[in-house]
Length: 551
Image (tube, rainbow, N blue to C red):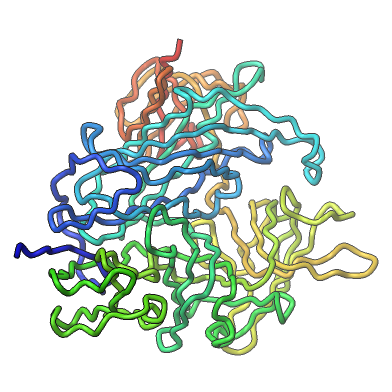
């Protein structure tokens, strides 16, 4: 009898470093095809979404509606649908300090991939007005999307998917450079600027925010498994993330302790199994991949039953088949569940690994604004631009919560995730605070902070758009569209390029847009930048060249 061999994947700890790129895949795979043969090897690709800040004085919300994300191999071969099946809308302004998971997809054939296709169905700009706490009467604008919202994003470096490996990509939508004010403020053009980054050892990602259910607790490793935390497309996995609770982690309880900091041991208690929590932390660049296991003919369980497969045993030494639900309770690092078709029932393997900064149990507000008074050891005050309660004063008081001995209190970090001291909370830095309200009779409430995120990188940053006039070796001059740049009226701005300047070329046509890393700055180019004003000119480490070919 001809033997049937089928490949299945299981979680396995991998301590090596990824090798060289492998050959590209030329096979087209439908959205829900499960690849399990020995000749067609697969991995998993995940997408995180984040945003570079836009001018808060112009917009209170930038709502992007995403209907599909595709992965495309070299030469537009091997298209894989990473996300589809319903439009998701994200307020990009809420993502300037953090990234969130958009989708994870398994059964992605191994090979090299260079392009991501993003499809937008709408972009809603909610304009700022003089009543920041009342959004009911704000003017909105929907700029035309070129090519019906089709954006082709080329990765800075092509990346490879290897057997059983999980590759995570971050799509960084630069809302500030993407939204171009039409002359005389008659409206807005959408000129899509999106950076694609592969989460790797060299790349410093933003903090990631997750919400999910505590499914497993490991006290010995100070970790927990958070499931239903990332959207999984056509996967057996329950969208789990491995959460590590190190020395910098803090736990805040708004179910039993009014949002106060509590010992990590309480989070790891058995009564927390099944509870919903929010985690903000640092994503790791490496997630344990899979290895192959062969299930030979004659050792599959009968139809309707499952078998708990021990990876350390041969096929002939495996345990008898039985009830799938009962056996699923015994899945572990070296035991997986297979059914009659050989499909892995490893629901709980993690798609991401995150070092926790803050874990929140219960409801917490997420309020944005600016620091209004410099902080002392007890707290500070802030103006509120979104997410806050109705207050009679112009500012909201924020209280730092100290932890008891051995317990971390309020966590203060920069938008890049660097831990800060209270004295670094100074005006007028943009700030985001997670916390709970302490109601005070006869006066405004106080916000008891669990997490404070400061956008220190934005200090001194000014966005400039315009037309290139002359080009030098490491600099150029331009005619800025704004009348005043760096506080000075000018029609010729001198721009110096940083040594590690990053150039992005955006080509916009009626059929769609293509965003490609690299490009050559030439006279007459329409460009956009985020840079710093310095004596004698302007310094930037990023330039976006916009080639708008629309008729």
